[in-house]
Length: 122
Image 1 (cartoon, rainbow, N blue to C red):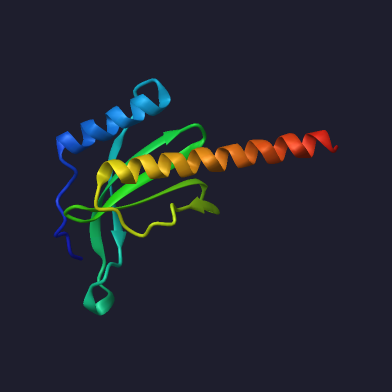
Image 2: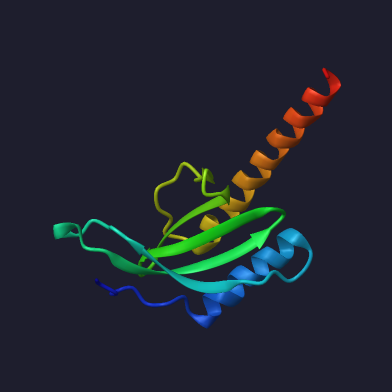
């Protein structure tokens, strides 16, 4: 297994924590993790990718480094309900985090609208 990708720096972690505090109005528990991914490597080798994880408003979020300044993100409610942003990779951490937060907020609005509409017609 390869691990050529450095961990999220303290500055990166603090920056993401600040973005989350701005979004939610309170400090969010940001956790470090690792995920094994099959990147564009020969022989289908797995690469250990540093990951930031947090959970908020019934959703779980991950941002993982797939290169030194390359990020991927998604959020999920359960293993069966996983969502991406429609963008394969980001070269800017702020844009990566803000985009996943916006996509999740949009998804949350759609869910609320559907449940409200379903209740009205029941």
